[in-house]
Length: 163
Image (tube, rainbow, N blue to C red; front, side):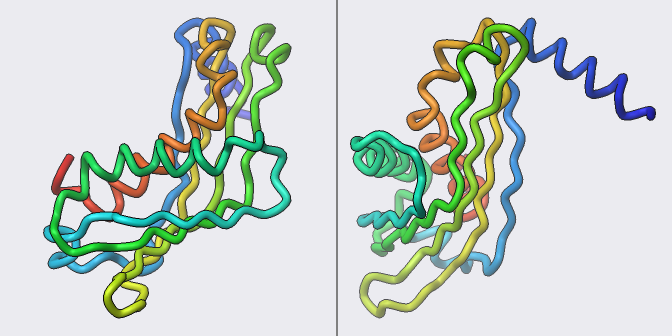
């Protein structure tokens, strides 16, 4: 019963302030310090389940994630990101305007040494972005927002020294 007031207050804060981001990411197998210091992502492959996304989603995802990774993984050793998305929920615009809405992404990120084909790291990536009426425009760009969040989460987990 004590959770209700906290939840209600959080909902009111989101409605008044815009967006709030919550991470549900975890490390399955961490990138070694050598790769963290010297790795860079040259290639991105994307596998997605039966998600309701726009035809441009693959290009949006790869471009937004690559931009984030280029900022945090600046080494010389090439990696391939094998991204798998199994959940992508977009906020309902009407509910976001009236109360609040959430954009949700769940997936996995494997980093592979391009030279050997060996998986060098594996991460679960989960991001929920809750927004209220003042964030309706931002929340409406769910694919862009969640793609950037995926890149941010991978930077935090695999390349934290660069932040």
